[in-house]
Length: 158
Image (cartoon, rainbow, N blue to C red; front, side, top):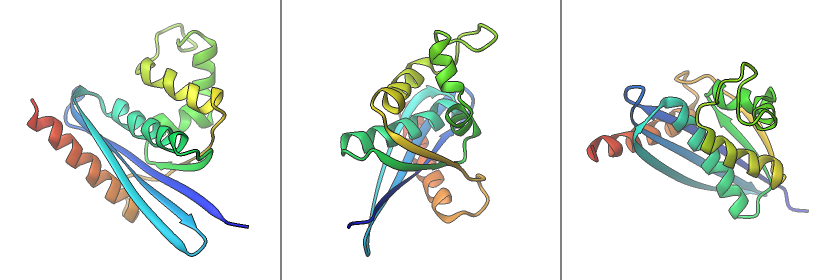
């Protein structure tokens, strides 16, 4: 039996809040004795850090879905993203008409709606792991550098 594990390290970067931003993921596929690594990134001229953190995780899960991978691990340094899923906030926001428990509209609704569909309606099995940012974890530092490079691309387009 083949043992296949897929990890996505994700990160976002923003200069100002709002300001130019970038997101990135590093995909690591382990299959028996081989390792396959891919990266992807994107940018946006006017955004927030939370939106870029969320975009990175969303595009990682979308990448997995498009490739038929239903069982993945997302590793990121964003409590906003990890807690929204692990603590049930995303599920509650959906059930509350995309409002907080205080009745306020959630931020980044468009991405959260798409993320919800992937996670719950497409039945993706995604494990979320939180790592401390800027703490020397090598792959997290690499994905941060990719997100910063993407952010610089957004700055160049201003």
